[in-house]
Length: 500
Image (tube, rainbow, N blue to C red; front, side, top):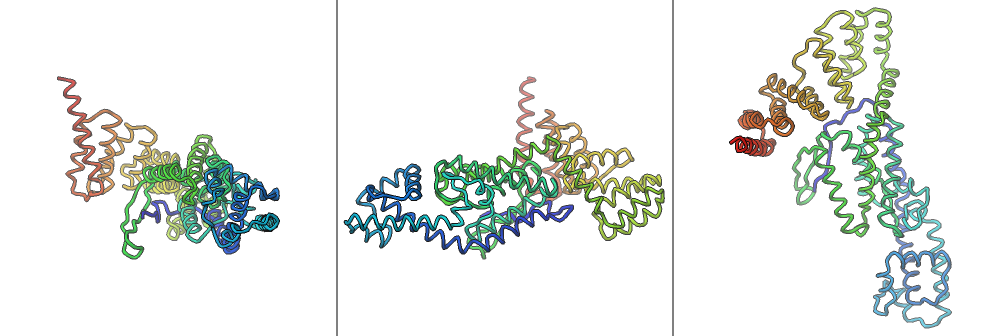
């Protein structure tokens, strides 16, 4: 069994208080409800079956309106099972049913129906699931929200909360708390509604946070498509061992979505899993994330976060900012450098220190600070700001960035479809780090762009062959390299045949 345990970006600029709050709230609600729900569902299931069987076997009995509505809903949604219940050969479900088969007295049968119908009405009125879970045949407005905070067991809860943590805290960091919370709740509502559309007339209760979490997964794919996710593969028994691998989000998450669509078509709710809620939540999340990006709300949220971080920054940063405004650059630099020894990844401190070095006309130090700001902006997902930092780094006479940062910038240029710039950056990275793994990955990236985007198969073939011959360990990249060589050779041969 494959299971994700982490991804590359396990850091955030602020505490993910909304994500942690959602997880805590789900656990508290579960602890307060799950034992009661288990008892209620067992009792209610038995009474429901008694109502159905008695109504099917004796259609002439009078049934209370509430119980009659339940029977009518079941008959409309599952006519096959209803027809089977009406047959004399239908196997008794329990001792009560077996006893009732032997009763011929109409008054006694009616009294039994009145009794179990009354019990059904009382149980449904007090049932947590009936009141707060989502029932497609009779959706209550509150259930669209409340159903996402109910869970049926520890594994159900822990699985959902783990995925909520992995996908949620980085999205909260990228979008800000209010927007992220609104998105999460909207994803839960959308997933619930789509599940209802996929199962119209169903009287089965549906609950769990998985639809909302699937929305986070769809947004994660749009927001961080190239982020690598660490998977562990348990085999045999849980104690026999596991094998880990890294998979990019754009491979793993669409595969998961395809599996949910497949199982949704195969079983619907038959396996007890709301597959269509997962599909609906995922698609909603992906579309909503795209809308946030292109509407500008994501950019505004990021800007707002940065302003709040600056406003609530450490006293040292506020003090350095005041000194900068008063022209005391030397003292501001001392305070910032001291602060950075304790908080080396403070974006606010590095941004101010860059200004200090610029005002002091210390170009090398300003260049180094700009490189660090670029790295931190990339880590925070602020890609446009990071690219502007890189351009400033070059304007300051910069040459080689840190290999990992530079590789991400190359990928950013490729994602923006600026293929010539991406190729140039990949090639410069290869030249600067010929013995580093990032240099090998950049070489493969340059080959890929040459072949697939710029129609330069000869250059691509040369680059792929150089990567294949590299002394840098690359067993995990070998398949990509070999397939690239084959594709490039075919393209070169095809071009040669066209010339001749």
